[in-house]
Length: 390
Picture 1 (tube, rainbow, N blue to C red):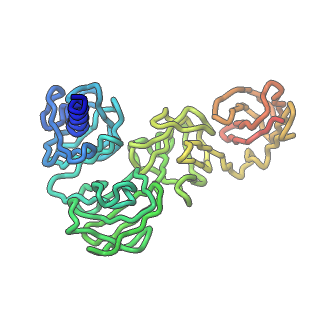
Picture 2 (cartoon, one colour):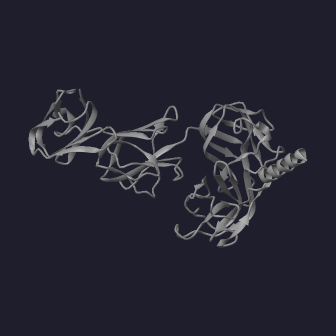
Picture 3 (cartoon, rainbow, N blue to C red):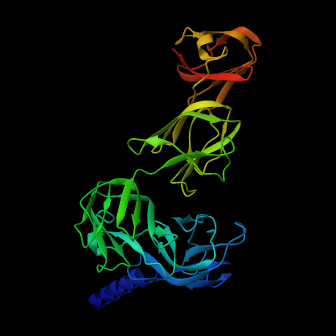
């Protein structure tokens, strides 16, 4: 009797594990057209869910239109993100702002990634141990995104060191491989491609087989440049972690950093000229000037350093001494110093003065030991200098 009871419990557990997760789409732009009616998706592994030939309408208001994924036809567990046609949905995230069309939809219940690929276009995925180190070629593809059925991209995915193929429609009939990295031309039924571990932005041309693996791009945009609807101005990198740009001209306004020209991953903070950007944080307020800018993708730390001009108000005419100091910094300039602001390393303003003179004593006796930044304005020019308190 005891053995039979244990067997029954085990069977119930297996049944619950295999069949309990129902994943659906719901919303005003979903196939049902309603926030009250789910459209269930299908799965073979209880992780990746699909719905083919789904008719989707256009979302117009982020507060009331769009769609979401949810589990068990219940709002207790639901996923959303404003991005379309692909993104990473989070628990209780924003409505997905869809564009009308007929799509093949995929959703990963574990990591929240989703794609809407126009129906009629073949899917292209990356398949193998490089995308699933545990199951290898026994795992499903990681689907790429396309808008034309020719160029496919994959953003924000972390690869394990290993081999992989590009393949079409999750079928080994059409697979592309090659031995060259980070760029090359895949050959049908060619050798598998080795990918070093890390985050890569991937492009693949289904017609030619050309592919590339590049570091994710980090761009800066905002009202201090050409607006938040304009193209990003990309920073450069040599390692995929530290990014920089030199002599970028900014006006008074706001900016943000974002990855791969998409709002899925973006950083902001109120700190200036230095700070730590947080995911989807507030816009960074900046002061007009010409800057060298650095950004660390792994920590979100950023720094705006004024590169200065060669006019009479340039740094060559301004002196700060002694630096480091135990208490007082002397600031002298050839023209009137209008304002002096002191910031901590997080970009928080902690002191502010209006000297209205060409000489000024900055009293740091109340400051703790460490590094600070001082923003000195004179007329229309200003400089940002690092100062150290012993």
